[in-house]
Image 1 (cartoon, rainbow, N blue to C red):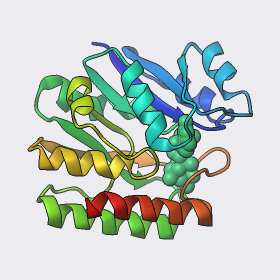
Image 2: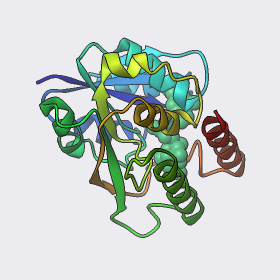
Image 3: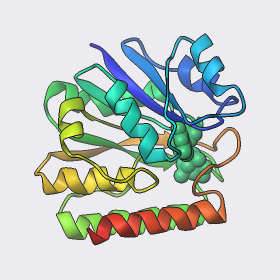
Image 4: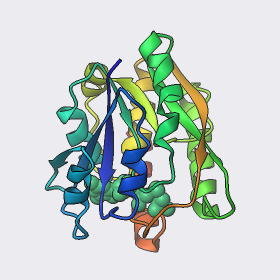
Length: 216
Ligand SMILES: Nc1nc2c(ncn2[C@@H]2O[C@H](COP(=O)(O)OP(=O)(O)OP(=O)(O)O)[C@@H](O)[C@H]2O)c(=O)[nH]1
Ligand SMILES: [Mg+2]
């Protein structure tokens, strides 16, 4: 079994050793760097990861680049801020590898106080509810740890290049009739500084990106 794991990375020098060190056998790290200034690319390379550069800023741009760079049939996505534990990737990838699901999302379950700031948590829950209502797919979280087949993902032709990527993937997959399922994963406090939802600017940017996805 071989599964490429796309790790979008923007200045995650502090978290990369933990993240890459916890990849189970058979899972290969593809770190997508958007011009980190803290040496993330060099650190990832020294830890044995494949490192690809994406000139365009944005979570979605990075995920898309990683997906293109991946070569395995089944591909996973995982944040590399140490909020998600790569040791739990097999339970997310398993149903896709077995052919029981087309997209599996890791439903985040906080394991420590402060792992999940309340505004982000509420916004996320509301988005999951909108997706349920709109698509009938029973999800409770837009979990960023996920697994699907590479070719099918590319065929979805996702347009978002920023924070709407995860939501767009879920909505398009549901519209295309994919079997979408959820499995619990741990969620812990991040290592290092927040890039997206932890800043006011990032938070509102994310809200705008998500609205755009849902309006389409
Ligand atoms: N390559 C790349 N990676 C990014 C970019 N923005 C965020 N990331 C990465 O995407 C993952 C998620 O970003 P986070 O900053 O953790 O965003 P979040 O999970 O919404 O919010 P917090 O965990 O609260 O910070 C992390 O691994 C980031 O390093 C980007 O523009 N380019
Ligand atoms: Mg995070």
